[in-house]
Image (tube, rainbow, N blue to C red; front, side, top):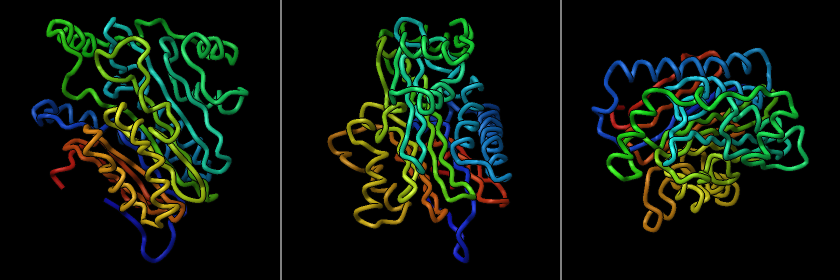
Length: 314
C-alpha cells in the first residue's frame, strides 16, 4: 500500500508500526483494538509534532518509538515478551539517513527505553552496537536511570509466559510484535528506529532483527528509510530492510513495489510473518505485510492521520 501527493512533494511524513502477525481475529477483541489504536495515535502524534515544528526525522522516530516502549500493549520496552526463563530482554536500533550513522543495543534487562540507549550509542560511543552487561554499563555512564526488572514484567505477559511453559512450547499467537518508526523531515532527511522485546519463550541471549542494520532497520537519504517486523530469524536472513533499499537503488522501483517484493523475497525458503513500513525521500510511503494484522499509522504534513490494525479489512 502506498500513499503520495501527486501535485507536490510532501515536506514531512511520519509513519509507524506496532507489529505484524497472522492471528485469529478473536485474539484482538474490540476493546483491545481500540486501545492499540489509541497507543498508535499517541506514538504517531509524538513524532509528528516534532516534524511539524521543523524538528529532525531522527528526533521524531526516537520519540515515537519511546512512546510505544512505554506502553505495555506493545512488545517493546515495558511490554517486552518473557524469555524461556521468565526474563524480559529488549533490543533496538536507530539510524540516521543523512550521515549513515547508527546505534544498536541488545540483551537489555534494565533499560526503560532501549531506543534512547541506541541513540546514545550512535552519538556518544566509538562502536555501533553494544549488548548485555556492556550496554548496561554504557547506559550508566551516560546518566540513564536503570529500572528494576519488575518494571518490565506486566501481568498479561506473565500469564502468557506461564501458559507457554505449561504447554512446553515456545510459540504463541500475537508474539511477533515489534515497534518501529520512519520519518522524512522538512530538511529532506530520513531516519528509522525499531525496538522489540523479542518473541515469547525465546532462549536467553536470542537476538532478533530489530537491532540489526539491514534486517530490522535501514536508512539512507538517497534511497529510503525502512523498519521491519515479524519473524526475526527470517527477516535477518533475508536482509529485508536492505532488500527494500537495494530494490529501489539498483532496480529503481517505487517504494511500495520495493516493499511488496521484499515481503515476498525468498519466501519459499524463509517462511514466516513479515511487515514493512518505509518512506522515500520524495515523501511516498509503503506499508506492506503478509499478515492479517499489521498495527500501523501515518500522517503526511497536516493531513488527517491514518491508523489501522487489520490488513484484510481495507
